[in-house]
Image (cartoon, rainbow, N blue to C red; front, side, top):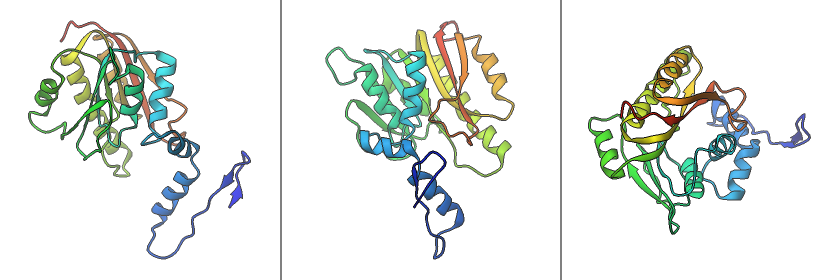
Length: 228
């Protein structure tokens, strides 16, 4: 181990054996990521929890008693933050529906649904499970990276558009929408479309989002309800 430019100890993973260079670099980044260490200490299932925390600390769209649906929820970091902030499972608290294509262990305070959100009829199943209007739709959905920037951009923007389509159908007037996007050109078109449905639309990159990542998030609040 050696110290990095900030004075923190830096863990170096040895090369060799069957480990690919990409795996070595990923493991080194995980071992040296302060958010990963903090997530372990604080009991969050992923470092992504801090992205939602930081966004909500600034924009305050999660409130006690709200109904939240979290798309692309696994392993559950965003759902954990939502549970805390809407006080799901507490008397008078809200509720959280966590949806993901991958299996996810039970999460106290949330209803977990394993479902391919892009499959035919999936949106109807989510709407049925919700049973009524929603205050916030969250989407941290992402597809496996191909390494081709434009392809990855188009894939994630398609997921964001699918989440937005659900939001338009289930959000109560005044509701909010937060989703992951990738820089690549078409995100501005999405923002302009969202401005017709929401009073306020912002494009943010929280500190927990790695600086070398093209990801950022759109935050839309004040759903007008006209298109619901």
